[in-house]
Image (cartoon, rainbow, N blue to C red; front, side, top):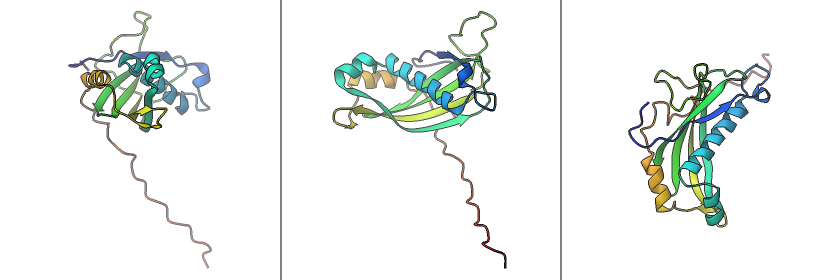
Length: 178
């Protein structure tokens, strides 16, 4: 994907041995950890860094998330996370992360861009509120932060905005077939 607006840099990690579960691939908790690191990077890039949090007492609080696991990820895999800002309002921001396994065999370094044919192994869509921690409630973004987030806004990918598929409730088992 080529960005027509500003793009956030990719965030890179390598799957550690302790991230592997009893099925032999990355455990679900560590997808959330890697996505959390990508949220931290987005906050730094948009001015919501540690200094901002210390001086204002405000931070982002994730209030909703939808995560999709699309493929297994083995130990040692090199990961890249692409972050997209999907929308921003006075007190909230909607964004998405896409997790990719990247090939570092050619240069040995993590790529700065993703190949056009790259398919994510996991995605998450999040809604976060800008919270005044002392007041314990949402508060408006400073204009400079809201403008920075707005400058990063992209169209939502086709998978964003979906809910979890309905599964019909099972009929209760007959007590005793008499």
